[in-house]
Image 1: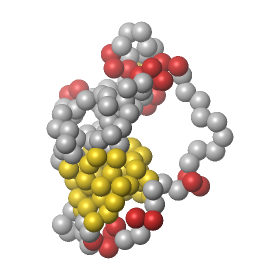
Image 2: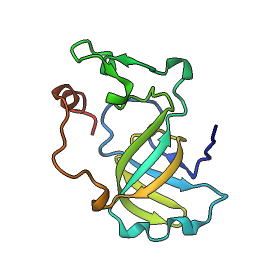
Image 3: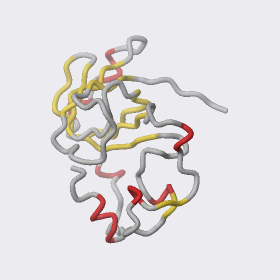
Image 4: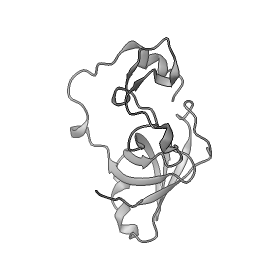
Length: 151
């Protein structure tokens, strides 16, 4: 068994779980009190960050441990939870690449974070070209439909 502690919390204008229109949302990521502000040093040199956070308000009784239709849409194929990015995941982890707007001390202001007010941030990583996928990315057509209004 293992445990993790939040390194920060999300301050967001969005308070409820929703599936769409995250692209222009600006949020603050506020560093945990027990961590040094120096943890953020150097981040301002990067344009984008990867934020790993916890869907802490997803009821554990609602977790998907098999396959289902994305967004419960029967027009899309039933696929396993690891073939979609649903919030009802076994470990309730979210991962999003965001644009870093600014850093002010213990606060990062970002655009495009699909986490709601108070969500615990478990890790923050800079986006580096060398870690991006090599080659062409492939995905099924239903996933393009699903993401049509997400950002």
